[in-house]
Image 1 (cartoon, rainbow, N blue to C red):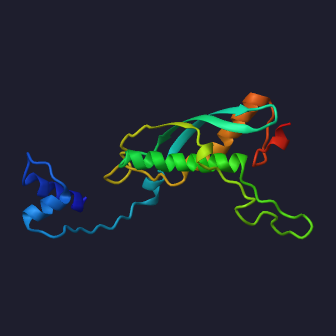
Image 2 (cartoon, rainbow, N blue to C red; image 1 turned 120 degrees about the vertical axis):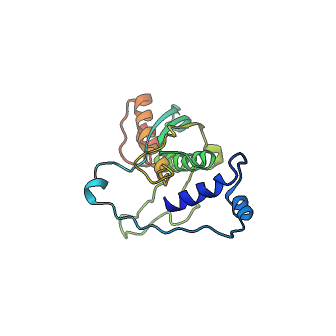
Length: 192
């Protein structure tokens, strides 16, 4: 809060001239602006609120007669507080979703039951999603300031795009085929 106050005070020196922080510092003859703060919220206050990010994923798949599955379209809506960089957030979510689809449909470590070694220890046999597997994405954010977070009102994105993707694919496959598969990856042999 002290840092925010210092920046606001610095900006009020030129009220009708919006500028980047670097320009404000240069105008005021300062090289940097600095503040310190130690936060120690009590446990009861912290437990009143949930500081997690949330999302919902909906998937449209095409399953051919041989059991080959293609993810055609994805709709994802996420609540991560205020978006500081929406373009980067969208890319992060898209990458996570693609990883989740890859996990759901392709990625699988195959162990040798006799000796316990991994049969596919390299990327030649371990399949992952590539650009050709990328579906149509429709990603949206609620983008509301979280009043219980620090001054920016933003929460973390991390790998939230991965979390719902495999389940959404499995549910879409169930809706299309009537077969509930709970073991990943969902391969054609599990659908025929």
